[in-house]
Amino acid sequence: MTGNRTFTMIKPDAVENGHIGPILEKITSAGFKIIAMKYTQLSKRDAREFYAIHRERPFFDELVDFMTRGPIVSAILEKDNAVEDFRALIGATNPAEAAEGTIRKLYAKDIGENAIHGSDSDENAAIEGAFHFSGREIY
Image (cartoon, rainbow, N blue to C red; front, top):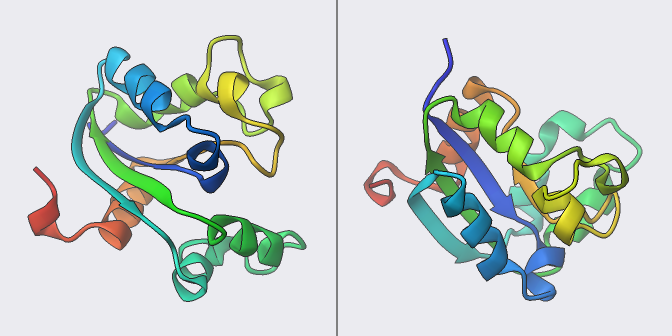
């Protein structure tokens, strides 16, 4: 069964490059409803916890440094088939392989600075959303 919520973060590179507005426009134009959103900055501790699944990977420290170098926009989105539809909207992790018109094709620099995060499963969407938002912040 597919869910109707997903989690996203507009990453520091996209924030630094002024892409918050255009990315949010693409998200809402694709039929997603924003039910929680905040502009914040991850601490090293929070980034290490959020990306703990990658702890043993060689890029882990670089990922933590990148995700904590500036502010992010985190959001919970709602739409039928949210995770799958959002993954299609953002495109492949490597923007060189992303389909034309996807967020990463339009706004990402490379595989490391790829503009946006999108949950990869309904289960992770719930976990990631709960990491960033309390119940009273979700509308």
